Amino acid sequence: MRDFSRPGRSAVHAGTAAVATSHPLASLVAVETLRTGGNAVDAAIAAVAVQCVVDPLMTGIGGDCFALYAPKGATTPVALNGSGRSPAAAYDAWYLDNDITITPTSPHAVTVPGAVAAWARLLADHGTRDLADLLRPAIAYAEDGYRVQPRVAFDWARHAARVSDDPASAATYLPGGTAPVAGAAMRNPRVAATLRRIAQDGPRGFYEGPVARDMVETLRARGGLHTLEDFAGAAPEWVTPITTRYRGYDVYECPPSGQGLAVLMMLNMLGPDDVGALSELDRVHLFAEACKQAYHHRDALFADPVLHAVPVEHLLSEAWHARARGAIDMARAQAPVIWPEIAHTDTVYLCVVDRNGNAISLINSIFQPFGSGITAPESGVLLHNRGLSFRVEPGHPNTIGPNKRPMHTIIPGMLMRDGVVVAPFGVMGGHYQAMGHVELLTGLLDRGLDVQEALDAPRSFAYGGGVELEPGFSPGLAAGLAARGHTVFPAPGPIGGGQMIWIDHATGTLTAGSDPRKDGCALGY
Image 1 (cartoon, rainbow, N blue to C red):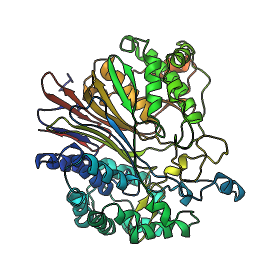
Image 2 (cartoon, rainbow, N blue to C red; image 1 turned 120 degrees about the horizontal axis):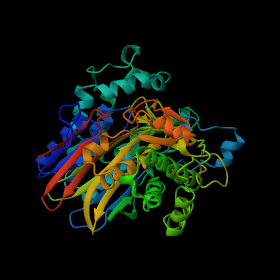
Image 3 (tube, one colour; image 1 turned 60 degrees about the vertical axis):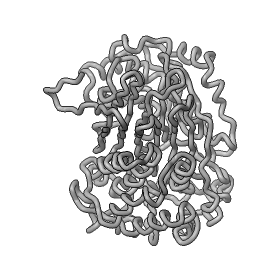
Image 4 (cartoon, rainbow, N blue to C red; image 1 turned 180 degrees about the vertical axis):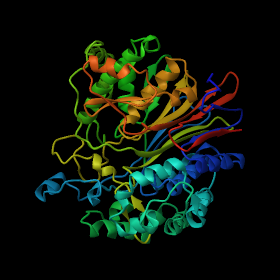
């Protein structure tokens, strides 16, 4: 139980249904959807559509989506890969021949956005409401306006430069030439019109017709290889989730092209250790060393499995994790692994458990802050830059190629026990997400924290050759890590954000938490 004499937030307990999102308007819409008869999938789609309007740095209809869904009674969740593919003409040799580098604001960083198709597929297979019905709140906020929340305003100001050079983006997101402050009223009528078209025509209203033409013409005018056929071919894919067992629970993740495999690899490495009994110094050191090994393999091997085999079974084998754990020296840091990829952190995650016990874990992303910064001027679609994860390196599993998905960082999670869902969960934060899942789960299952306490706990991340530390750790931790050979530096800002809903089947209680690093909240009834 938290100390009520100190600032903080409590976990939310509910008996019927619960939601947790990173924006208050999304949480409100999700609860309203549930209270008017919608199920978990309906509520999640309504909520994420709202976030695509009110939190435009983090997500949008020009982004991608992944989900894990556990219907009541299911013994395993189903997984949806709603990420988009590169253009059919995107051969790595073409980029080399033309001396083209994929930069954050390049049209070549834009893959076909997969989110809208993913929402439609989720609803068609597991929802109960029409897409048009669920998009009404998002359309209203885009048309009539919404108030900018504090964390959104903070990020908006920090990343305003991303949208300053594109005329359509600047006109939309920098009214009067500056980022809006907290409490400012904002609206986006062009996105409202596009959402109405999607509501009327379904995903065809986005991937075909005037909206698709607007996106394709915008990208091709900047040198992109995209065609109307690339957009018309957008299709999410139901995939088999991957899993490992940790402390008696089954942890489920989406398979590659996402990085969820790295979560399972790290949990397997930590399995032999009594993480809850470790000192803070030993725990953070162990996390850093496990993280470096898992991420090194991620960067070398993870890719679109349709086009390149990823050795999932080997990386989850007892032989691999025993060898990896055996290579960790608890007294000394290994030589740092330097990742060439550019950091990226902009995503929204949400989870819902409905009155029937259906649970969804959903994540939607435009990749970096404001994505590519490119807005299609007629439709108002701000395009993501997920293709920045590609390499231009023939022979590498994650080299860019035709109709290919890049390695993805966005990963929803689901916890089950004995074939029964226990918790949908997720952590935002780009590269950090895999480590974030590990810190969240070990906080709950090893350290005895409740859902909110585990989300509140200070975070560390071994990334880029050093260890980032958030405020809140013991004063001597940095010195202790340095003595073991780590390069330590303060985190440049809050690390990630997360949500979780724990289902206590014995009492019927739902316990939901939402990360204080964001504006959002958990709600239940």
